[in-house]
Each structure stands twice: as structure tokens, then as C-alpha cells.
Image (cartoon, rainbow, N blue to C red; front, side, top):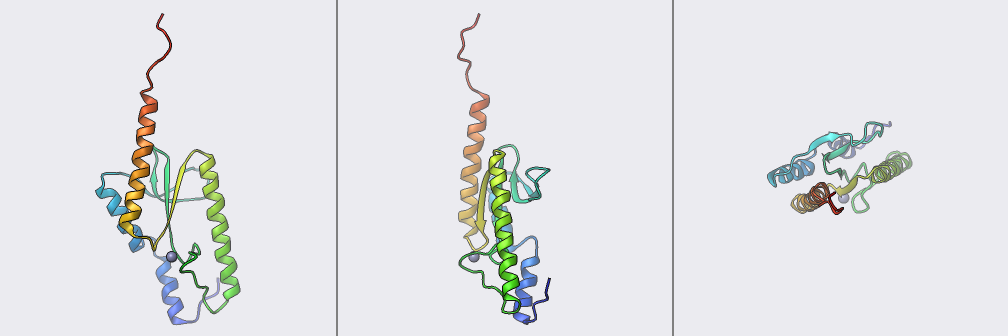
Length: 152
Ligand SMILES: [Zn+2]
């Protein structure tokens, strides 16, 4: 990939490479504080080349916290001036890959939640909590479905 020459761009570029970004950590700790347990940076399906940022395996909820730069946030993505065309197509490719991987997950029965890293971590965490608790209830009630057929 071409090296961005502008030092400001390079700085942002390097910042984006950090795996555990601040917003993601804030979300994770808020979700943890709410009493939920999850896997981090894990694959929902072994044959899909996609890793979720937070994964709730039992209730099949996969959470993605997308970086505004790499995932092309409509509010914050500005292509670097150098190689602008290359960047635009790179980010378009990322978006297309996100879209198809998440569609595949949904077809496999996963609930997919996508957020932007610019979103308020507390609000994101409470949305995640709501969805996971609802999914857990649904799973629980299915296991406890009363038998309706008459006993012999
Ligand atoms: Zn953004």
C-alpha cells in the first residue's frame, strides 16, 4: 500500500491501526460492567473470514465497532490527499466486504450489530445489552417451552 506522505495523515493512519481503540475499549468495559460476558476479536463462524469485536456466542450476537476511517463513515471519512483514488477504492472495498460478511452472518442466524467508533460508548453499550438480554430471554423461553401434547 502507498505510504501517505503528509505527516498529519500518517499520524492518523497509524492511529487507525491500533487494534484496541479507545471507543472500543470504553464500549467493552461498559458492557462488562453491565454483567455481560463476551469474546473479543473472535470469529463467529470458522469458515468466514470475519472477526467480530464483541462476540456473544451462546445467543449468537456479533458486534462490530467500525473505525470511521477504515470502514468509510459517511460523517468522518475523508480520503487522504495523496493517492485519493486508491484510498477511495480501498475503502469502498472494505465497505463491500463488511456488507457481504455481515449478510452471510445474518443468513447463518446471527444477530449483527454495527456501530461507528464515533458513537457514544455508553449508548452503544446499552443498545448491545438490550439486544443480548432479549436474545437470552428468547433462547431461554425456547428451552422451557411447555409440552402441549397429551400424555399417554
Ligand atoms: Zn464517524
